[in-house]
Image (cartoon, rainbow, N blue to C red; front, top):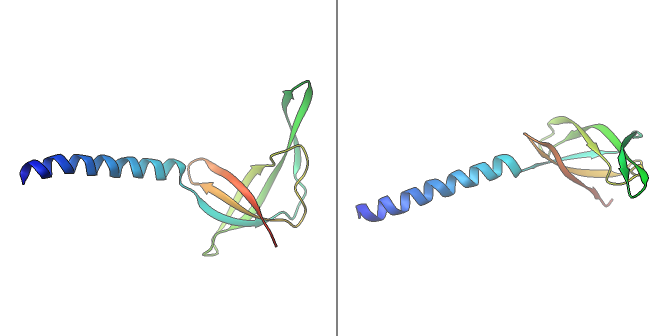
Length: 105
C-alpha cells in the first residue's frame, strides 16, 4: 500500500502543478464589449515592401457577472473594425488580451 501511495502521490502533485501553471499562464476569462469609438491608427513597421498599420482600441468591457474591466487591444488587419460590432474578448490576468472574436447579432 505504501508503495502505491509513494508512486501515485508524486504523479498527482506534478499533474496538479502543471495544470495550475498552464491555467495561470494561458487560461482566459471572457469579457464582452462593443466597438463604440474609432480606433487609433498605429504604425507597426514595414513588411513585404509596404508600411503596416494596426488600429488600437481602448474600451470598457464586462464579464458575465457585470464586473467592468478596461481593455486595450489591436485590430488584426490594417483597417478599422466595424462600428457598433459586439466582441467577446479573451483576457488573461497576467498577459492581458489573448484574443477576440466578433459576436453575430
